[in-house]
Length: 272
Image (cartoon, rainbow, N blue to C red):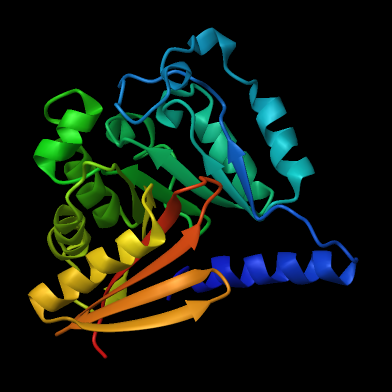
């Protein structure tokens, strides 16, 4: 399924809680940015998000107060690179104690020294690794060689240790959509190396027109002889590709960009 069952049920409980109190607007996710310090300067990142000074980071107490006051069931920790945050372990433990779900958005380069062995795997903790394409593309976007290989190594180690892992990809106008298809199959098949049918999710932001995205998916399906199904739902249009034991579901919904779209891609390796 799209989300782990416990996360989906907590999201539903939160929605029911607010609806019963007559609230039509309420937060699903808190985007927590405890620092603007990073050891990379990726092409798709704004300058202020990797040039901040560590001494200017948000205090731990202020971060936890924001989590508590927001009432959002899910907290996405980004920045900056959150593994640089000195109080990261205390922050994660505090959010888990507040019974919130965490997406730790990271380039994965410091997971072995800043996370592994310091906080145990937990059902409320998801490591969300940034992968902007295959090796050449990802290293180019990150402006440093070796970042892709290190991220892949850390994903494998995180899975071995029992952490829940997803990946996040920004697709640029210059990106070859077929490379995204390759990445979607590479991650579950070659990194996670799952022996049993299971699923993983991949979130991408893609600025292009909805018709252009639809035509690209139809071309992929025709070229690779995938079965393609289309379904219009509350969150956008879903495209389901099926072939052998693999299934990829892509949900496309409009963003606030006048001529753009936000694309969410969820890749599943499963039998059906």
